[in-house]
Amino acid sequence: MPSFLKYYALLCFCCLIYSCGSKQFEQSEIEGKNYLEKVKKNMSKDQLIQQAGKPDTIVDLGRVTDEHDYTQHLELYFYGSNQSVTLINDTVDALDFNIRKTETRIQHKIDSAKAALP
Image (cartoon, rainbow, N blue to C red; front, side, top):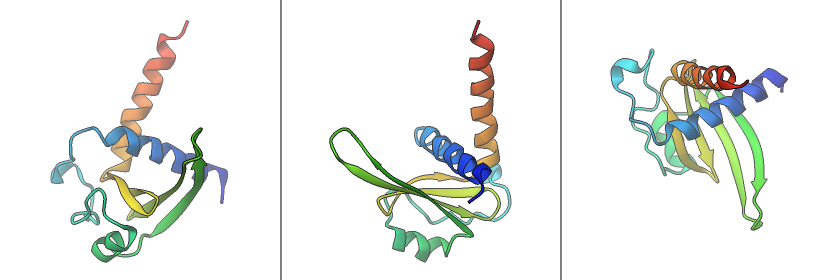
């Protein structure tokens, strides 16, 4: 897998984690077809595929083990050119209905943090 795709996947994962606590996107903010219209957080991988179909791209971010030896498997499923789902242990953990908008929001935060450095 090209390194930019890994970076992009990691950025999307961070974006999705960030967006979990934010408001639900309104339909007007979704570009193109809403593949994730019927998908809900905590659905199983099978339920996701049943509702949204097979993803266009799957990025397996691997397994992460914490200090208590608890292992989580992270995957990103991409639908269309601008929507994604984060799966943790085969369960929907986060939805991003507008990847480009999320990336812009995060880049703004990164730029602001850099500007604040001496």
